[in-house]
Amino acid sequence: MTKVYKVNEIFYSLQGEGANAGTPAIFVRFAGCNLRCPFCDTVHEAAQAMSCADIIAAVSQWDATLVVLTGGEPTLQATPQLINALHEAGRTVAIETNGTRPVPAGCDWVTLSPKTDVCPGAAPILTECDELKIVFQGEVVPTYTDIRAKYRFLQPCDTGDSERNASLRDAAVRYCLAHPQWRLSVQLHKILNIP
Image 1 (cartoon, rainbow, N blue to C red):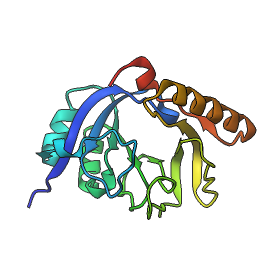
Image 2: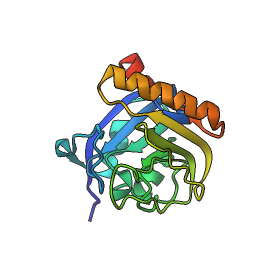
Image 3: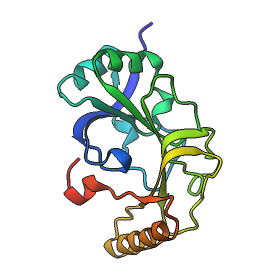
């Protein structure tokens, strides 16, 4: 039986966050999540059923080599079969996860964004990633010292309120300056007003 993926959208833009910020990327946004974060930007009800071949055909519209599996929570749906097919199509596969589930084998880049501070029962099970990204809401920053990461990013939450956003940004800058193992991540795509 052919695996059916519930896909919210597939689009081409610049990666707006983290170590790959500014890199042209194809985003495969899966619908569905095991958490309900108050700042989530995915409309889960807008999903369409797609096969692996459908996804590869959609991704093949663009020349960029970086494909970002995102959501929602992509580990609910991403499979080694899909990741292998993307590799065969000449793509590098990144995944953005809340870390509460195992990452499928074969991903080239793992962005772990734990949601422990906003969702009960959201403690990550992952102990290693390429980048650890904390969405900063002005609270105490969980350090996650038990997680090995090449990069650690603090990203101010977009609250929709420009004054609150400026306050969070300034506090995040101060935190990074005081804790230089952390880097500031801004949502470049929102600053540039691109998808």
